[in-house]
Length: 145
Image (cartoon, rainbow, N blue to C red; front, side):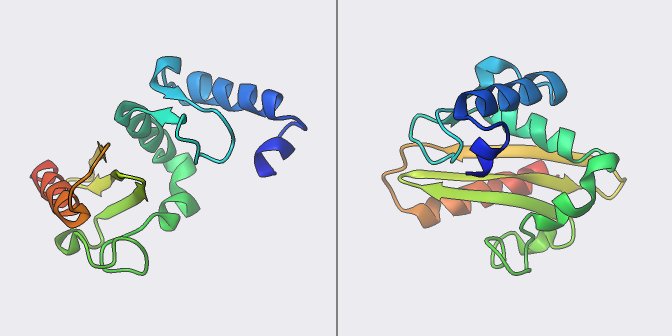
């Protein structure tokens, strides 16, 4: 309803969303495909590049504020409370899990004040999710070096 309420119709809201993502945030239109406003359709698709692009856009100092506080952090309440603990205070991220898909995207603050952005998505995972999460966390560890 929030999505439809943006403009009064799903079609007009979709156009507003597409225009924002491509024009304002700078994401190529080929990097995402949305079917509805819920984000839960199996036909909704987004590339890791698009996620990193929106993370960079959102992390600009004029937008960072409350938004970054809403992301999960290692050791804090939320989906990263038991993960990536060596990066507590330096990592803000978003996890995602649905029907054989595991994702972790985020921003890692470096000691010199710069940031590293990442998005890891594992599709069609038929194995043990804990193994996938462990591998994703190891990748973040390598990104942090």
